[in-house]
Length: 173
Image (tube, rainbow, N blue to C red):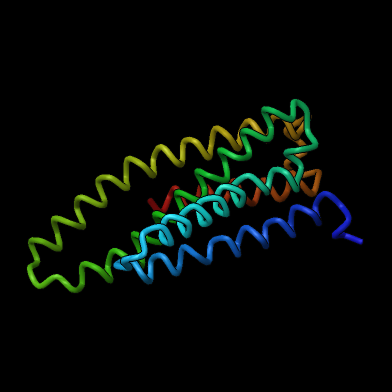
């Protein structure tokens, strides 16, 4: 029954989008492949899947049902994209960067790479956090009629938890 709803249809399309990301894994694994057209097609499929994964939460959820839909949906897309960027760079910062720099024998090279990444990351993270805050605020204003809904409705309570977690993450730096 659920598959026949808008939500179910979008979930099925999201599964397809995840499958489109598989070529990215193969592209990364075969980065030195001599078959360039295959790599281009893999990247195109992965980008298509990633874009749909950013757009689809708004299509399946409240963003497509709240007026004005154009503002709510576009705000949701920007919100999800900024969140994905921010969390992706956090993963790179915590997991990938240490693994790569650990292989460097020279401490000066390691520090130079770490400092360069942190400087770039800090600026981009600040922009992403600002975009998340602004787009989330737009969605909250459009979704709720009163501040009291933050503790009186299930959506408001869920939003309150998200706000607290967001503030906690900002506090951690």
